[in-house]
Length: 639
Ligand code: ADP
Image (cartoon, rainbow, N blue to C red; front, side, top):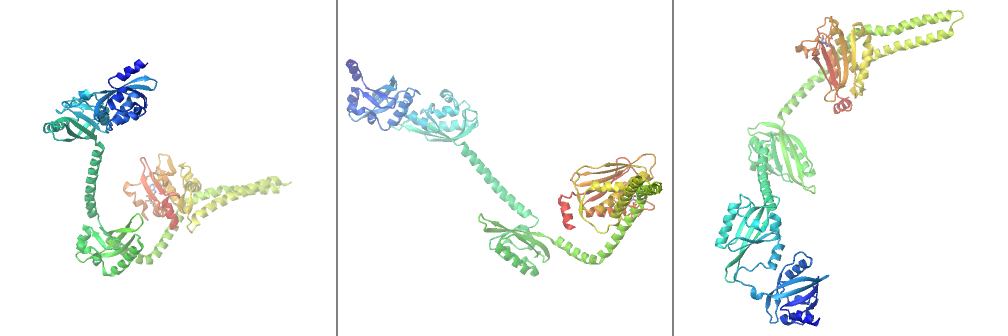
């Protein structure tokens, strides 16, 4: 053992054993001989004190890497010799036992030469691998000598491949000629190199890099190596491009804005919170004949009509006080002295605390509207006088229409009422007979009397329906189910239709929304349309008479009722004329049914129109907004 120890002590270098964490538990006599220090001092981390402070961090990094099995490398570090001189040594390590290592420092200082580029020592490698950029070392002639790990990772290439960068695709083809020129220039002149270029990432995507290279020189000033650092600036480049784009947009939109402001068919202005005007658009200047300078402050007020000036000033001050938006009508003087009416609108712009920071205004020319209003006002006065007469005529016409319809349905009513009346008479005589028999048939008479009552009620029903239809005077607005209203009208007209040989085809859509309106008036319209259709088929021979009555929702979700016949139809040019009052093609016609029907439908916010069928005949249809819709709400409020 002592023999072995003396061998270890006699080794030409510092030999030691240590734990994985670098704590030494043994050093040989070489330590004492080389450093001149006591061996005990070297135990634990004591030996670190002999390592050059600049080299210690690199040494520890490589120590740990070796211990972890990552890579076993020669570790270069300077050790302090007994004479106070730091000398380059190489440390080599081997595993000794579980968690224990032995190491050997060998002095190599004499072998390190300054003439040729020094071999890349471990520290430099460690350092360049730590730099979060692409670092490359180049020979004085400009050839690629070595790169850091990020280079290999980023570019996804081997050192050998990278050394061919001037012919490969590492540098973007568009940038390559410029890069080669600049690099050759730097190498020739030995001036720092700067460039921006695109480098290809492992996945094929090119990123922008800023590349800088500085020459390293020896004591004599000779370039020994170039250090080239390239930093990814792709994001900044993109940000810069975005900012440039945004700035271009802003200036373009400013131009557009001023074009728009001057193109607005009105006057646009802005004012400070105190109301003093700072801007008016070109149109304002063109109209008033004032310049922007003349309009600024309160100069604009000179364009206001003297009769409106005081009111407008008071209103404007009230807006400034309240900070609320508002509008006012006033006359503004044109450059030629002529005044026109304008609607002046002002809207405040507020900051995040709600304080008004600016007022924006717009003046719209409302001269035409004002003129129309004044005209309407004078017409209205003439009307307060004529409305009464008109109302009278209208109600007379309505009455006439009702009577006209009444005469047409009399036959049908007679038919309807006739049946129960005949029943009543028969039953009454049967009843009498039964009571007069000996013995009287009381049970039979009772039953017959009951049937008499039933028939009497039926007749009364028919009469009631008629009364409702023809004698109701006042208008009642309610939710009307058009299906139900139409069914009632049809029930009343069945006899009339039968008499005319008309086959009725009802086609009512279920769950039809109700409409707001006067049930009796709407039934009058339906009655009128059905009777017209029947009459249009009256003269027709040679084909069956069809009458289709349908309901449903149209494309606008309005409720419609259509009456379609296969009768005579009408001349296409007459489609509108039919609705004129007193237009009729019938010898006994009055020509007011359709005109009254149309005014009834229009009062229900609806439309009544006539179209010719593809085949023979015509279709008359009206549409009314459903009760739940906004238009019906208006009818509701207006009623
Ligand atoms: P009248 O029925 O008294 O003539 P209306 O105003 O009800 O008055 O009708 C005006 C005219 O419209 C009728 O004379 C007729 O020429 C035409 N007309 C109305 N309904 C139809 C229809 N279904 N088919 C063809 N023409 C019709």
